[in-house]
Length: 344
Image 1 (cartoon, rainbow, N blue to C red):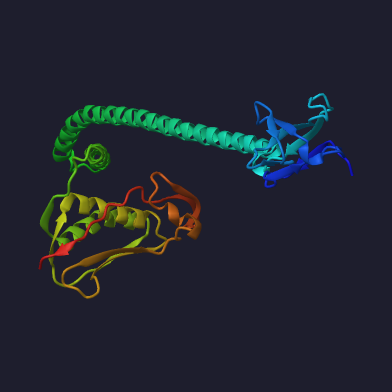
Image 2: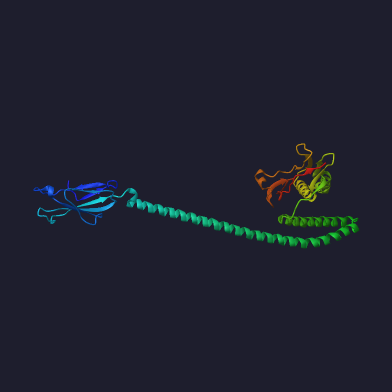
């Protein structure tokens, strides 16, 4: 088989080429020269050897040229040419480079996308912080506004409460006038309490509100509160009763906070009871160190699906049926609790 082109794999780069001229008179005296284009810069002459050796050729295309000396000592004979192509390894092939470029493009795309997402998250966090600060500023502005208004309202309320108290003392014996003045006094006192609660809330938001624990007769305080609500319970045909220990005992509590909590609980218990309300005071796990107050009424309970909302402010559950009427049952808007330590 005759060929002018040879293709080799990348690991076949060590080889030799043997050649011979048709010189029947004196073949041993024939001289040769060869040139490997791509490697050699000049011809290589051979006197007796008829082989050319090549080692560690890189991939690429080479042209091997060989010529024999003529019988008369000239190089006028015909040149023979052999094209040799050494293939590159796969990782250096065009297909491999295409894959490398594709992978590089994918990596750059992923890197750019991740960077863009990181920038977007950073900007989103900055925007959220900015919005949070703005909301905080607006909230603080509203609190300041309500606080200022509360201070302004509190002064005329105090001025109204004084004359009403004087009129009650002056004309309190007349039934018609006494009833009207009593209603006015009660509502004025209620407004004063509300303004005080707003100011307390402002102190709480500003971290200026703190509990002031004092030694308090718990039974006496609860009895006084029950007395206040007895009339309201009687008007609504509610049986308001207590189950208190026989002996009074003292405990360290914040008196104002304790009264607010109990007032709120008794008021709601009476408002949404069907026929009876019971206030119980008992030890916790028969301990002399702690006590528990339980407020029980026979009204309809808050539905199970709404109980997770009991600490959300201003939530009202519609559809609670009480004494044959459909009403709105308010859930507690704020939990004010602390450990009550007995000291008797």
